[in-house]
Length: 488
Image (cartoon, rainbow, N blue to C red; front, side, top):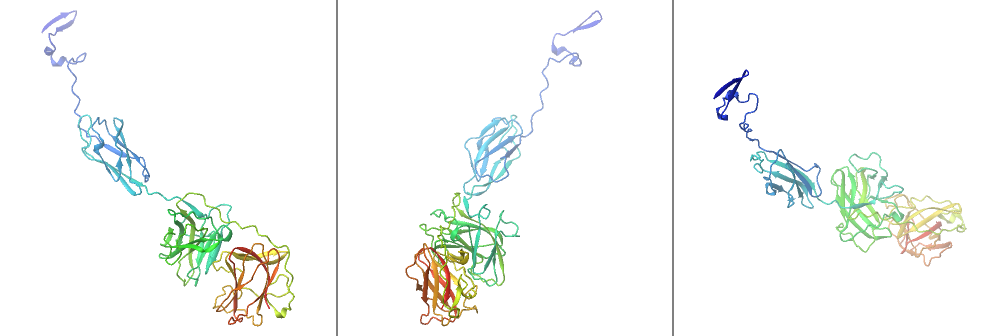
């Protein structure tokens, strides 16, 4: 090394970088040697797996793999394990740290998809393998919910719901104070009263003849559901569908309830033993439900019924039947002329006779028709909508053989009826006493005018001392206005 002093500065001439003393390196500038090497990367990469939904998926789901750093080309479809599902054939690289894969759950099942990466599945650019595994459990539910529509929609606006009870049931709609946990909206309270018949139940309807819309049964669609509440487990619920115009066309199915609210399914293709089978050629537009069928309750039992639905189609509910236009008389029949002492009267609008009390003009015997008050010329008479048969309990509300109230018409062996019909075709009258009944044919009917029937009812062996009921039967639906019903 050679030193020169010029104008107060010491100059050092270096022949080579290697001859420069170490203490001079970095003084007044950078060294010409290479920078020291960066510390080696020894950190293992990590991954997380997500699907964007904690709720059960119902279709193929996109799964995202997120890495803590660039993993280069070390990640492949073969590194992924899919349990309880099927992976798409292609793994999509979004960027250096994100990949996506579509996974399809099995159809018609519920469970959890499991997507996982094992330790050692991938590496970063420095060659470090992942040490921690990564797993995603994604719930799925691909069981198809059957489409349905409300056969009886308890929450429909502008609809009048009718409840026809039978056998000792008392129903209230809408129910007040229904137990919690049930369906939203209105429900029916059905009380099976103490001592009610084993077949006691109710027929909810929105149309003529206790009808609902026609149920579209097919070979594939045979089920209905009912939302019900039972106070105890084990109660058998029966659901019956029938033709509102023909009670012989019916199907019944049963289901056992647990305690509390639930949805019961009734398959009409599996009818109750000993009852008719589902006939796809028939019309079914009436439904009845029987809580705790087969049991006579020792105390009142309270049940609740929500919407009854038809499964298999999302079509709008068909409309129920509407009453036909009924032609009515504008005048009354002539007032009876027999002395009151010779008559026992059930009905006469003229006031000629004092009517005896009648237990029930419109008992529910399972028939499709009814007897109701009608006003003609300011007087009250009866209108009988005769679909198949209709009865009158003369002696008491029940007309049962155990009732003490019977009507003794001894010496009055003729039944008189004034009727007016525009559409009636046939009519039979059955007097019924405590032990027997028989049919009397009214013969060819008069239409569009008042007609008078005088029917002998003193058949041999038929006692007139315990008369309980009258039954009217027809072979085709018709409307009959009735007045002057008396015995003489």
